[in-house]
Length: 430
Image (cartoon, rainbow, N blue to C red; front, side, top):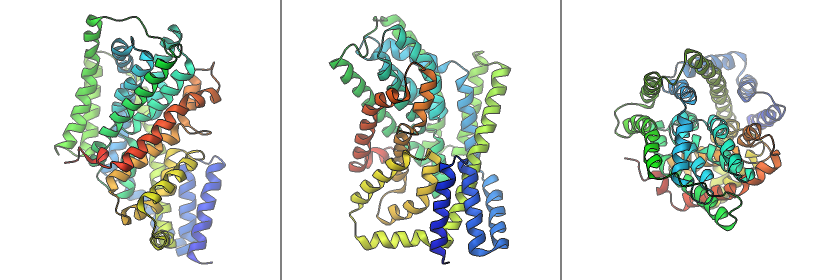
């Protein structure tokens, strides 16, 4: 059996394991190790596995992952999310769909600190949905807006997905973080326009709330202080080259912890829970990363990547036609796999082709993250929708997916704009 056939069987086996519900990290490691064993023998396979575990387990850059996860977990216990929504509702509440618009910017601000989509949807949903019930909002609209806006947590830095992509492709994580800022803001604005337009046509979807007045409005801006301070500290330091992403993650944790202690917004019990959650999440992510590197080495030995590059080059495709086909593929994969699984399966094949076609690797990182955003709200797996379902038990999963569809369409428009105008992602890069 030749190497290409072994590689193809390995990918089929991986897909079967994932569809059976085997955790993606274990599935990747099992297929990668088995494939290396089949191609190179027992000794080299075990040697490669040992090297990958040691190298990635001691990779200084990847220390940023548990640090940013811990930063987000601490923030969840500080009440910042509630402050953000209150600020947004004071400023936007008097508009049609104002509470939903406030939730979009609340998710953007909260996601800018946590870097986690799931944490953003869960935390903001528990705060926003009761208010929407109080003002007789259409919960289908509200749940859809929150599910979609939660995806901003992986686009606006710091983002675990950017760290994951950067480690897989050996690109600057700092540049990826900076490249996500403008697309993240643009996404929040477009989502808000979708909400405003729908509620302007049908005011029953999202009634305006009583005007809070300028006093509460101005006082509520104090909620932005910690967000802007932490965001400026982490991203500003990266932008001006003051520190590396790993150093930024440590400084971010110190900043969040100092804020939580000074304002007495965290207890020892909450801090212990934050650390425990961080350990669990980090173990899961590192299992995926190690498995990803194992399967990447297996695929290099099969020669499949080189064959794909040669095949695409032989087709003489227009690069933008290739991106269109790639977008369709990601939408389909988003129906079957989680975000990390989708990236692990595609990046080893797709990234070399994209670079060969002349696309900027930092731009492509932003594109991949936006496609990951779409995967988080794509039926039938749409992780954010199922998290939202636990917050709004009166809504069926189908109704939440229906509420997400206008934002799904908006995401496709954002992808088209990003492809047509790559400078959207690259404009802030030094």
